[in-house]
Length: 182
Image 1: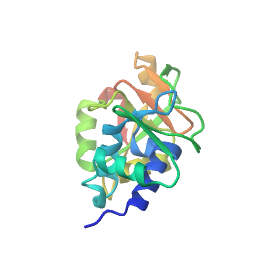
Image 2: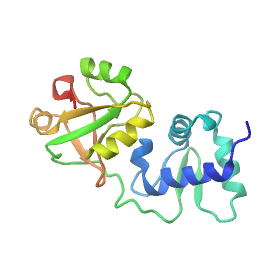
Image 3: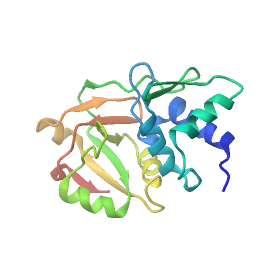
Image 4: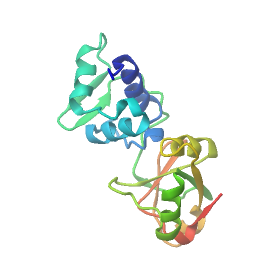
């Protein structure tokens, strides 16, 4: 199957410029994320992108009539057009009382037993509303499970949370005792 590079370019734009939290991407203060994280997120986002690679992304960038992205070493960012209200900061902060996490039914069972862990990422990603949690969960399953995190209790018991943007919060990990199915 031939990959639709225009559609892929729009997805890259969406991931880097508009809603990185839906792809569980962490942008630094200058909008950079790892190419490896973007590749993994795109592969997970759509079956037709199962073969996306670093070279595929480089080809999309090279063929673009507008220079929308920049790759440097193992990092990539959008050059302009960000509609994300602020960058994902790693500043410890008091979280909302409740946060949510969308995932697949199989992974939900593991999380309920073992807690939320970053699983190869720097942080656990948590949503502030059900709509965002469902959108994130749909990347993992057609019938996602939404987990409710008692963030106030977790924070009071030493779990560190970091403010992200208006849709996402980050944590190093969340023990299972603070997590329940919605």
